[in-house]
Length: 395
Ligand code: SF4
Ligand code: SF4
Image 1 (spheres, rainbow, N blue to C red):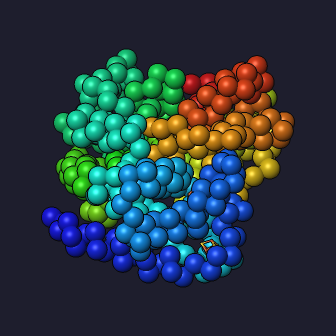
Image 2: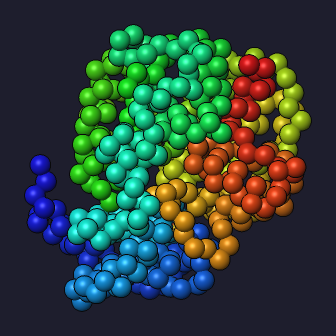
Image 3: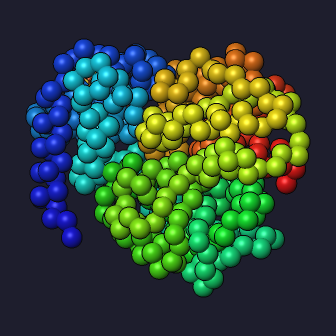
């Protein structure tokens, strides 16, 4: 059990110690999507965000308006990690994201943050085990006509961890269906959890350490008790959370589904049935790319599909532009001069693509909404890599 005073003191010390090292060189601004999409205020960029929390602590600010502003500054960050990479490569190596997330925890612990709609997401995880406030009984509705093993009563080598968005959102449920078809096609011994719950990456991003601890302990227990040897996730966010933020999963191999698909395509285990005459561009999700260095595998899967031409957007790999949905922004509207997802769709169109391939449910939702917003439905479509592969196998 965490001691509140000790917890706050540790957060404050960590923030002050690291922020103090900032050289104010501003290299980090050149890569920050938040700064690019806002009106150019320095507090809406990496160094400005960390200075805001630093001076809040140093000057002991307590005015209600200041607290509201500080909450907006800290909880607008997409947690994309671009600034961390830039500062590490070009300057002092400040752990910007760690400071921002520690700042968020501090605000939540003092009942200041997060932003109102983000609070609702946290309450929903507490109450229903998912951030969308849907009933847990309907979590497996997407699979009602599919024969899939249900763990832990049935046993399998691998757990397919579906995740909340794909489980509940009818517009993207086909990602789970495609992955299941592919796993069956490849003879994978897998199952889903009868009672899956949110990985709680949202709790961690939104600064609710206590909710995260509770959920991660429950989930770890159910994964271990299911007896699986490996877990494959739909979302890079769940993947990142399990490999970096959970404890007690050392004996279970964790993969994002891109690893599994890449393994099948490079080992020539896939028998393609169709040529897909698409011009595809790939949008790097932050939690596969900038957080975990997985840039080439998704591209190699796409390139293995007969007929497909892969083109690159202006910003790609570690310079990839964030879709704007990470860091808890799926649950709130950040006022932007130009929406990040719209900028990304424009980059995909400029690259000549008619398919915008993704490997993350949140990127899928954000970019598909941007296509509608820009009225570009006739010209470009968002498709998950698993859906592309399933189509090429005629599944
Ligand atoms: S790049 Fe690093 S050292 Fe330079 S302003 Fe940004 S955080 Fe500070
Ligand atoms: S994590 Fe991304 S959005 Fe947040 S401050 Fe750094 S570069 Fe900007």
